[in-house]
Length: 119
Image 1 (cartoon, rainbow, N blue to C red):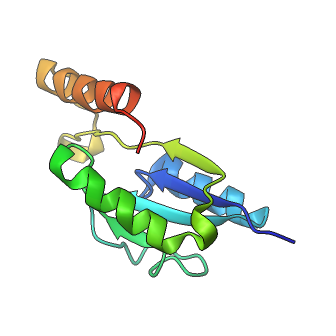
Image 2 (cartoon, helix red, strand yellow; image 1 turned 90 degrees about the vertical axis):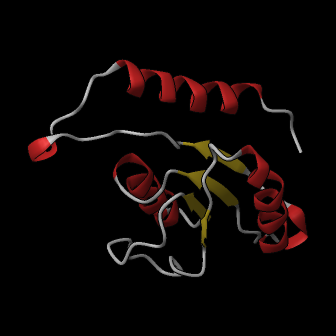
């Protein structure tokens, strides 16, 4: 039986973290990407060795990230990509910040993920 591999961005907490756990329960192998180093709060089998630290806003680093992902995939087969990367700046007490700067940065991340050429 073959194992499905997923690349999931923005996996360091929240929705990304929950998505990893759900798919792993169904037998998937997950490669995670986030701009943060591996978090000890992310506890699932092979979490540390499956994590790749990369900032997707840095377009000059995307080719190196793609190459690293290819190296980690058996036969180069990726069954799914979940692009959950984004930013969510917080204020005092964890409150959400709704600012023009936040929206501008979110737009840059969103446009990159929808308009980047495939590798």
